[in-house]
Image 1 (tube, rainbow, N blue to C red):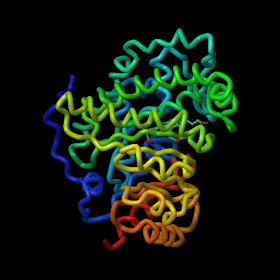
Image 2: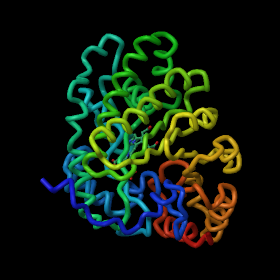
Image 3: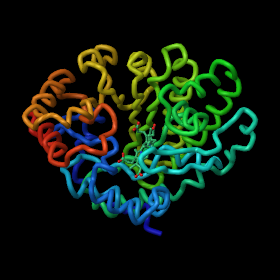
Image 4: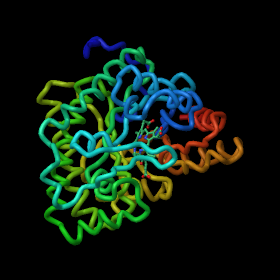
Length: 355
Ligand code: 1CP
């Protein structure tokens, strides 16, 4: 296996500089879901390979991770995988249905909690680590590599709903009807997520992001009870374990999509960066999060606008966030029909901002 040491020297440290409180030469930008369906080369690649085959084969995952880096002037790569590899490692079957997304044919029930294979679950995800190590070498230090995980509430939602949902009402029903069982599952997930993120750090991830993509289905009360304590534990424990293993400090980004009602609370969790979704006004996000480093938040649909308009929207967004303590991204994942040229306009507009 490729060595976890002697990685090539990092040439583009814009994101890491921002996180350390230093001034980069240009504003850094990366795009959530950049390694995916909007790239014609990915669509071609997918005709030959099953989704989870790509995730589980380091060479293939590395190849897809590099696709957007070859095409665009991005300031970070994100390892190709999916948040649902964790439910899979816990023993649930997950299928990727074309045009539909992930489906769990036999969702979790209160009676099947005991069947979850939590022992060794993170170890069964070492293939993601191997993909990270390989990608770090293949990147040649061009940009830093981000590892990621889904957050407990978000994964809980998919496991109970059996896939995506417009309301998450089945998962929310658990929170009201079976709070103890809910906490039990959230605890199991939290522990696997911690070990999984530590593995990613061990294998060479330089930044980690936690996706709480289903924050939008909760209110402040439910989020405080069923999301925040687990998110807090993840940040503390990952950092503690990384230190214990004498791995270099790794910053962690939290992106709670639709969690604007909790932005103020999120500042108390200790994450290095808070992601902001596209529904929040930059000035309001700044006001609520005080000195936090923020990431976001252009509406993914803004990429449908004419190029001149995209440039203006970027300038307005940057004026709202300010140029310090800021990493540019979209306010959610890029859509499959995004135009390559418009993506380039977006990235260039960010890099053209005078600091
Ligand atoms: O480029 C990258 O960002 C790396 C790859 C990546 C990431 C970070 C993929 C590949 N998925 C994810 C994270 C992920 N997966 C999230 C969190 C980000 C977000 O909120 O968008 C979520 C919620 C998922 C679950 C998921 N996987 C969905 C959403 C389903 C729903 O209805 O809620 C879908 C459609 C997928 C499939 C998927 N994951 C990734 C790709 C490229 C695809 C498309 C599937 C295919 O190629 O057939």
